[in-house]
Amino acid sequence: MKNENNIDKKSLNELIHLSKNLIKFIYVVSIVGIVLAAFSLLNLLNAFTFIKGMLRVLSPLFIGFIIAWLFYPIQKKLTNKGMNKVLSSLLIILCLAGVIFIFMYIFVPVLTMQINDFISSVPNIYKSVADFITNTINKIHIKGLDTASFKDGMLSAIQDYIKAFTMALPNGVLTFAKNFFSTVGVILISFVIAIYMLIDFENIANGFYKLFKTEKNKEAKDLIQNIGTNARRVVNGTIFVAFMVFVFDTIGFALAGLNSAVLFGFLCGVTDLIPYIGPYIGGGIAVIVAFTQSPLVGVTVLIIAIVVQLLESYVLQPVIMSKAMELSPVLIISGLLLFGHFGGIIGMIIATPCMAIMKEIIRFICIKRKEYIKKRVIIK
Image (cartoon, rainbow, N blue to C red; front, side, top):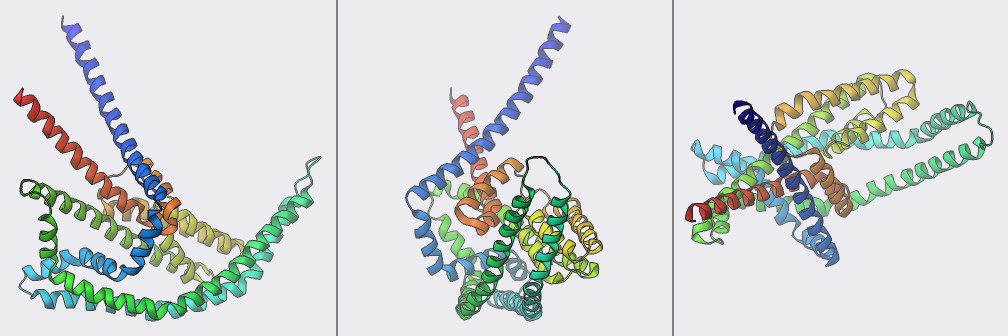
């Protein structure tokens, strides 16, 4: 009898463990399915064109809300210490504007100069890549394989890509310069809106909570606060980690002797905003360009890129991000594919915060469903 009980307990534990894994799998699949269905429906209704137009018009309001939402915890701490709401809000926005101005004042001239230097060095980069491809293919001798045509096709494709890139980059800079004043205007309006929203953020939030029924008010408030806390941690952590990657890579690339170190450090920082695949995109481009300078610079840049990536993965991510995301890698990659398909690079950057918000909503629904089932069982 004891043996049978032990076997039953063991079987029961295995069944419970299997059930938990199955529930986790269904949980991930359901989130991916909901996101896919929502995007498919929006695409079918041509809603993305409408949303893009609305965001363009309402961008100052949207940016102002994001700024207020991100910095509200700081403002709350200052007001709790006795500082006036208006003064604390002004201080936060002025500090933010000052940091952005100093960063742009120091960074933009250097970046512009390095973009020009990089464009002027593109012919040398192409020559180095072409020589490497030619020498490599010349060493391959396979009967029946036309290596000469293969080599010419590859070099022609690379040349066309470089030509298109060198033509697009100055045009992009020119377009940015044309839109600079309108962008500055949008940012200034956004800062003014952010000040007003910071001053009245609690009333705005309470007004939103009142949209729900009285008995659901507390539940809605808890849900929105959990979403805000988790999303804020993800956004703040991601931006800080990307900035640290930019700083470490820039210093490392400069010490390694890589031309346009700030440009490639900035590229690594920006692509690091894209989870999983982003760091390899920025680091890979830097390594390829470094090898066109010299093998020594290429190997050094490769080592620096690997060290920074390891530092980010095993030090920055665990310490800064902690368990703020709590998302499955499969879920994040699925979100990247979906958001990237519909929103491009911007879509890939906002994919993780959006998936974190959706995860919190679905988890809230699951908890409420369990509570409802328990109540029904007790009533019966």
